[in-house]
Image 1 (tube, rainbow, N blue to C red):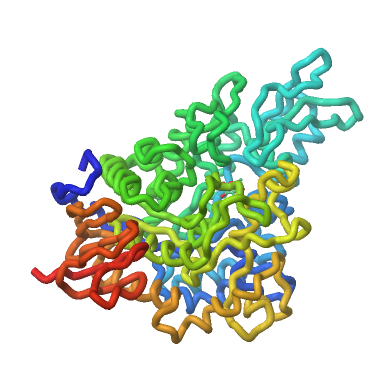
Image 2 (image 1 turned 120 degrees about the vertical axis):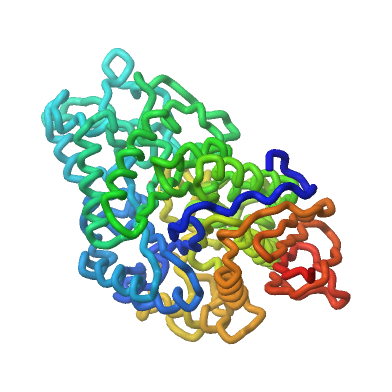
Length: 560
Ligand code: GLC
């Protein structure tokens, strides 16, 4: 399995170990856009609980919830003011307990989001730091530094925020004089913790235990490549072509520093104190599967998102290469490969796969973006891409709404946009609002069943009426029916844990065998013949002559 390519190779060993997270299909819930029970137009925990039966029916193994902890919502909850409480927007701790219990009753595990790189500026610690003396213990929990220039009027170094603009903000001391600067790799309301401080380590062990004690099955760890910064915070500017989450800029003194791994070894030990195979999943934007695999060595995290896979375009040769590298790199450290096509930070794959211009993840799409996708082509490819993905051994992540075939919402008015990226780049980057629009449940209900009042924090396009869950449920050709079928067959055939063998395939085709199933995806321009056998799932109807059309994938039990 060292050289990717169409030739047959030795079967790779199945993923080892029986822990649930090795093969799980994990569904990302973005709480503010999933289901609103209160009518304020923002989704909440009781809303999620009321819809869990539908996720059980879909067939997912686990849910990952983006942050619902106390937060001023300057970055949609990724700015946490209290890690051990629920924001009133989303409900109460009792609602969180009820959600976890109900999910478990449906056989669905629950992963929560942990945001350890930074807090909100409204966190008690940061407020204490602002009120405290320079050089005090309260300031030492964050990265305060004196400015450069004659009077400290210039930032301590040249780092830029991931969301645009400088990564430093200067404070005013309580007595009114200009003070030092604090580091924020993201928004100015998201000050970075100083992970050289043992108190920060202690606090996060406490937070992990708080949620583990409440019964969560794991954590998705936000910005897991960013916690440790290089000594001396040296100047650095990323290359112009690196994407906005730093994936291409692994030399940056704030990404992928060796010290992060010791933190995860420590957390691994905390999780191991608990029963039930609790898991850590790294959100680490790194350029290759090989680098990503460093986060999932046996004593560190259990999973890491495969962003090199997500960022690979609709190109058979490149997909073969990244699949091959992933299986090798994760397999070499005994970890499952993971696969993901969409999340709350990237253009939805039903749009992204039909873009005709470069669109770095995080930049988003809007009314004046070049290379807008053709919707039907995007959906056709998205269905095929998901069928290909769910055939791969390992664990897969789905993002809410992709099972409905939702596209990116491109035509959002400027005044409704809320992503800090939009504001910090002065509108140059649209940011991520287009993938965060509340999802449709019922074609005939207010806000398509998202909210009883009809309110929706981002407006839903009218066309989403036809994509509502209830409109798709009885329709065998719908994307929802396809997802249900894929998940059922994946489970019955144990695809996530199967062996893997590349099959010989023509240019533009990805083909492999996993367990008893042959997966074939046609990314080329013309139809291709299929081997004789039973078609288990197809992402679109086969041609009348039985060939597999362009932009279509299939799972076949080949006749022996
Ligand atoms: C992660 C999150 C993203 C957030 C950022 C800062 O990349 O996925 O939504 O804005 O971290 O916390």
